[in-house]
Amino acid sequence: MGNKTLAIIKPDAVKRNLIGQIIKEITDAGFKIKAMKMVRLTKDSAGGFYEIHKERPFFNNLIEFMTSGPCVPIVLEKDNAVPAFRKLIGATDPAEADEGTIRKFYAHSKSENVIHGSDSNKNAAIEIAHFFSRMELLENYQEETLNRYRILSER
Ligand code: UDP
Ligand code: MG
Image 1 (cartoon, rainbow, N blue to C red):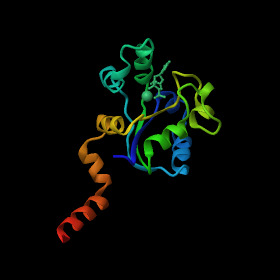
Image 2 (cartoon, protein in one colour):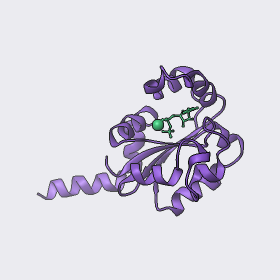
Image 3 (cartoon, rainbow, N blue to C red):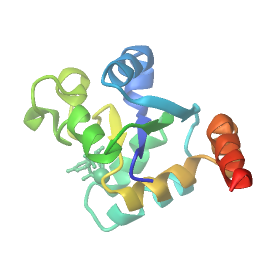
Image 4 (cartoon, protein in one colour):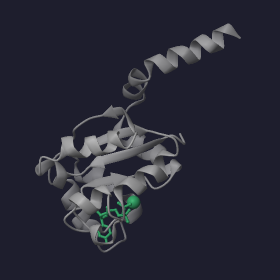
């Protein structure tokens, strides 16, 4: 899983009609889209996704925000995807994000910050499984999967 991460184009960006621009930034940076959908999270789903933050003072606001409209979860692939994508999106607070990052350019605040990126390989695997079934992932990997079976059967 070291080459995959989960991105979410958050509800603020979807409302501002930025899906296309943000996806272009991501693919221009060399990430490949392996799975993608648009969903409106329920409070339970958003609460589960952000479980690690449930004791934090911003938790209720975060859930309110993440359920305020549809969002776009995306599975991305690149070498060292997790740190590479965190670098592309920039710091949580756009005021602290480096020039050239997605949050610096598009985000309006530390809470409504346009995009999510997994923070570790372990969390990437958990977060990908939160949004995408094994079947949805496999369908997009058909070629790779077939090649793997071919290699196995030739041994
Ligand atoms: N967040 C917030 N206030 C804070 C910190 C975080 O509203 O002081 C929100 C923000 O949307 C952030 C999300 O909670 O993206 C998850 O926080 P985390 O610290 O994991 O930041 P990230 O990994 O998204 O940079
Ligand atoms: Mg985080």
